Picture 1: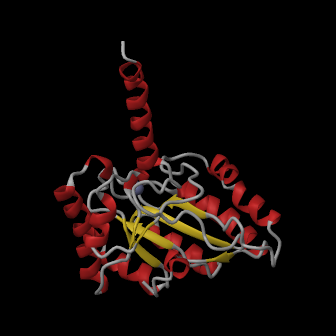
Picture 2: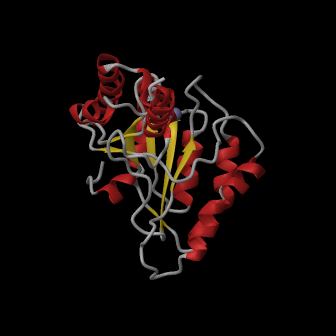
Length: 252
Ligand SMILES: [Zn+2]
């Protein structure tokens, strides 16, 4: 057998591996640039996916207000249409809003037409409520594809936002293990005292206030974990920032 033919399966496995890496690894830039860290280890960007959720988001907004913490909410278009008042409330409280697609589709499997519908549907749902479409996108499951960057830009999206910490809060669970999985935020902040050079940036934390499978998802564990950590993060001197404030995208 020709050595190149013998190597073909390995090369194909390698190519498939590279595509999988580019599609799913949060820090992979193969399919276009993404935002994965804040600019400084003193800055924490808290983000929430899969809302708005009338069963959880109002309590979450009150909790964040208690610690004067601004966050970024990546909303599902069909939930935005069901709860426009709640979307207005999120924005009125100073939080940023981003696109999390119309139906929570896995964008890796979407061709250009479906991509346009998923991104454009959510852009329009948010624009109807807030008067302008968002500039941020978080792809569901973190999955991207070679078509995504161009489709996002065509939809008016300027930043694709991933994360540095994903503590698996998307299923009902006791709060204690989630509190443990959030420990790296404090550990990293303690290792980066005031005035430290912003070498590695700070965390973009990905949590969930909704459930893409059904409205009204149970997120009591996420609320309880934040109730535990927000005062501790504040006492460590962490600054709570929104994604637009670190992406230079203005107030949206
Ligand atoms: Zn999601």
